[in-house]
Image (cartoon, rainbow, N blue to C red; front, top):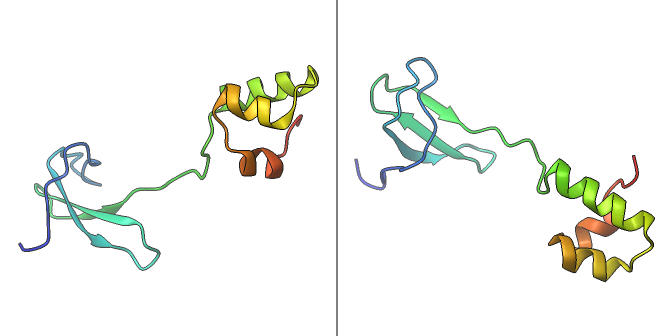
Length: 91
């Protein structure tokens, strides 16, 4: 099938949990769509929307209580400055 390349770490099939999947286009939302080679079913990965782990968020909260600068916190934790400005901290 032209335009379909093998996926090394793709998801398993929705019914058979088969590992050999191939990338199979995109959904209308822009997410990557995969097709299982065993059961021929398609699956789209769900993303929880979190770009930073809970542990890193707790570390940012701890550093905020120590009154470090915003840029200093972002440099030590690896979080972006725009994430820091819009994050619901200390919750």
